[in-house]
Length: 130
Image 1 (tube, one colour):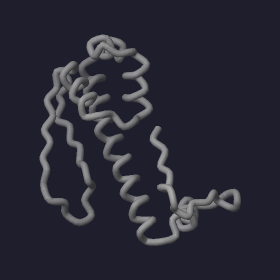
Image 2: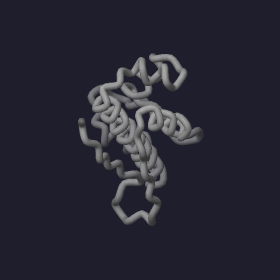
Image 3: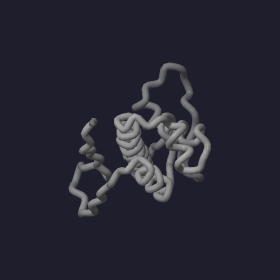
């Protein structure tokens, strides 16, 4: 689970009443448009990482490789792999590459100018289950 918190210096304060809607919370916690834009950018990054990890987890499941076996191949603890693939997180590029290698997968990253209203990362999986 990745927690999004306002950066230091932001006028963040907890909701004042119970039952506050998320929209009202965001309005109160991030009063300026700049604050809201940074919050939305952080949320978008969290979603992108989650999409990428979900695609990797689907590939692992399709390959019928237990998380413990993946961890052994990566020379790490099973709890580390399990936490990463089920709870999310912010893995390094090196960790992602290790997982892809051990699963026998290839990933393609295309970098191009971003069009308005498109996500910063689009994850497409082209896996076939044997």
